[in-house]
Length: 73
Image 1: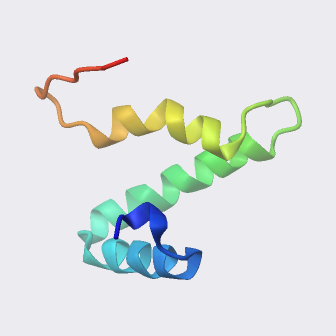
Image 2: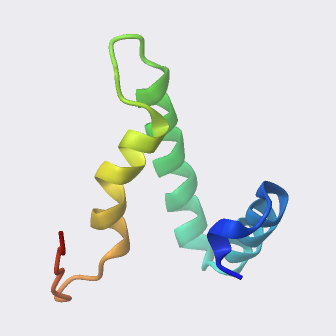
C-alpha cells in the first residue's frame, strides 16, 4: 500500500513519528519554517495556498546539495 493511500489519521501518525526522530535542532528549524509559511498563508495579500507554498519550497528543502535533480515531463 502506498503512503498516499493511507487514511489521514495514519498520515498524521507517521509524520509525528518522523518528527520525533529528527535531531532537536532540526525540530526547532521545522517549527520556525512552518510558522513562517503559515504566516505567509494567513496574509490577505497572499494568494498562495499552503499546497502552493509546499510545491514551491519542497524541492529546495528536500534535495541535498550536490545531488542532481532531474525533472521529467
